[in-house]
Image 1: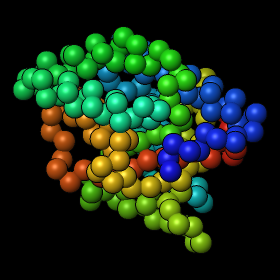
Image 2 (image 1 turned 90 degrees about the vertical axis):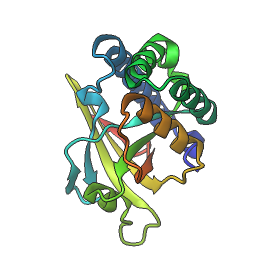
Image 3 (image 1 turned 120 degrees about the horizontal axis):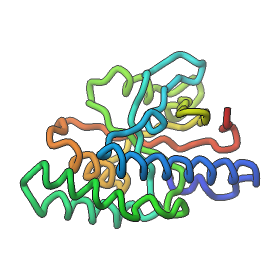
Length: 197
């Protein structure tokens, strides 16, 4: 379901989606090349619920690629080829610095984030609003002079979902101490109602 949101968008919504993805790819290339992979402010949106109450000051989100299953296999292979966490980290930064974010068209606009299963923010994100089937939120991205507000449906991913696996192995390359009770959610943007500030 999370990959179908790019179909039938209006021209304005599609242009905004493409602009946002290109911006995020630039931020991520810079983070890999100049900051050792540490996420910048624009990769860590503030999160508000559907009525504007703050859920989290910042969460780190990953961009979903259209080939999440292939990415998951590649990242798992990279993780398992060495037991040295520093070697994993350095190789991940090198790989992501090269061409991973070079082509924005490889990304569909969907995002994912991981949480400890006991997280209060996670509970609030997954809580459906009245009459809704899934949780909803607004992701507020900002860095330097650019800002976006992206309303999104929030869904818990199953462990066999390709985006879950890609997110899990991405995070494992950067964090050798991932909690065993990790929950990964997807944010499916409503590009029609998203805006650039």
